[in-house]
Length: 457
View 1: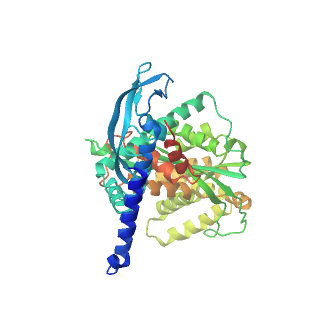
View 2: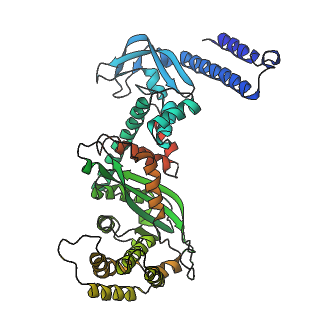
View 3: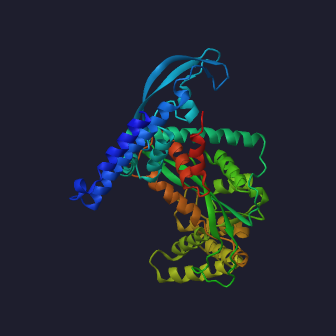
């Protein structure tokens, strides 16, 4: 389309909004008409730009991979491509490098157009819909209604998982490089307070054995925060340090390898330079091991809600679910925990455990004797240094892992569901976790990712 044809199209579309033609239209109909005209003009402008580009049909070209001579094989190869402004068809030369064998279209490579599938701007919309919808079918509906892109749910899934696979591959390379030579923090700032927190969720996979259908996904969050001392706050009133910018890591990998991903993310956020480093989580053994291996210099804080849940379980084990003594004992010892009197809690739990006796071999984890013995001689003594809540309040540190638990719920909206089945533990779910982590991170990496993807290949 030359300039004359383009201007004629613009005049035609402009005339469509003439009052005489549109006097019986309501606002919604007027907007739809104008959007349709704008779409036609935008497509025409894009096609005109592509047709005028000298790289569409160059007399000679250089290979972008080895800089050798790029031999043109077809001068007018047609391509139909989905873009954010609709589907367009254009023509361009296509060739091959005789030196390295690389093949492609010089115009596509110069403009950053993917060799296959939609354009990068359309891929961004597709991946956004796949990440924010609760299913790929939701993503399809979002694209159709808000993006004007018609794809099947299966196609949305294919494209989203392809993008996620690129993220996973890049992350693997970065972690491998970091393990060989730990990087110096790229963040030029030195955070006053940097918090690392993590937790695990559940993902359902296709498996013939129903007892082995659920697998664990791991979500890690790194955020900077501002100190907010509140020494005299009562339980429920303490706010502590507020999370500022949160970034995420998510994977189906085992905890050991996931720890390396989380450490690398922390380093990107300035972990090595942070003045105060905290690791906030529940007391699960695998999370403790991750902390000790990857964040040995961080102060470990046991999640307050997790600690008081143990007290609640002990109260029920002592008096029963419905007994009136249960609530009184729980509230009394919750206050002791809040005031930092952990020695008194441990002494009381050990006294009660001795009264009930040591659990017998094979006794279930839910039995009162098992619960009391475990918390009296293991959980609270082992976590004594991590439950000094008065000291944490005085410094204005966070004491709850709500950020990690919120992330688990947020990711579960997309990944988990009674009718959501992933093929295997490391296919599909892994890619979508990586895509969701990219989207939900609050440091602008989603925009940076698509800006890089749109660069010439």
